[in-house]
Image (cartoon, rainbow, N blue to C red; front, side, top):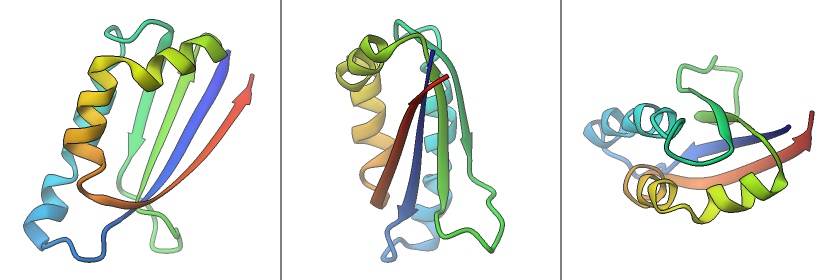
Length: 99
């Protein structure tokens, strides 16, 4: 098993309406479970404490490193990333580790 954790910072130039729209990231990423082989769980946290330096956190569990590689290029994941994540985020930090 493998954990794949991402921390994003939203773009500083987002309008209030765009910031509300960015919450679609949570719904759409969490909906990938069952669509992407080897992806066993997804939790997106959007309500972080003020002490946080990031705005969003993705916490996923994958069956293997091969599953992570497949997730990165899976059409459903790419569609969500291009539609709901990349337009709203400016900084991405990633941590992957075996569990």
